[in-house]
Length: 383
Image (tube, rainbow, N blue to C red; front, side):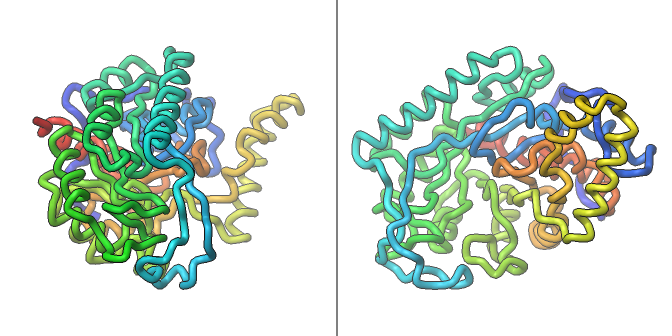
């Protein structure tokens, strides 16, 4: 596969390496391939394009350098969706609702932001808040994980001043909608009576452009997606999605959307983990267990190591959706996201990409370089 060299920010030739080669429990029998995997992870900035939780141990074991962390308010399902996943819901039907509205939603979001900042402060020797890509690179070079705050949905109480306040508190990525719709935007799970962005919704997009907030269109309805592309002057991200052509779900990105994200200069984050078949699970588990038995003579140490890897053998990198996204959007416009799933397994992903046929530079782009490029372009163009 061909493409431009994966993006690495200026001045960064090697990212943090949280594990020595000896500490990695490999599920491959090929020692040379294992050394290549460690080398790639040691010289890449690995970015999780979307996480709804932060587990430092898992991030470090997965060799993840940068994480985009969602801050949240709560939503409730109030009606079983009338249509299958392959069909958009009917406009104007209430399916989801926000638990908090008005000033209370702002209070809840600030509570979530403050909680995240407090957790960062508590673990400041391991993780730090990044406001720019330059910040992130400094943090990574210092041997820590860089965290970007993301607003998981448009909980701004219909007020651009609230959006500006969130930006001052550190938010650098924002989804226009998650599940419950707003008066100004809607999701693939619940449509407004007139789907898409209202004029105020377009103002939100323009203000994000001005502030340097990266707009996320994962979960957006088709109309909200296309209205966003019509309005934005900056690249966008779909932080955690799959390919609709393969999933047949309206929640995911159509081929036309993937092409449009590429033309916009943005990036599509593919949900990384996918279940293995039963045969694949058994083979992966056998390799994992053999590696553990060879490494540990003490049964208590072996048991502890096995508990840490309890889910790794059950999943694999979603190469089928990555390949399709690359085919439609191009190698420079695809990334991956965990959504908190199988995070320690990320240490295997560079090897999986190279063994699959991607060059090391292409793997670097998918693993993080493409997201960093888009973040830097949005940050640097803020007024």
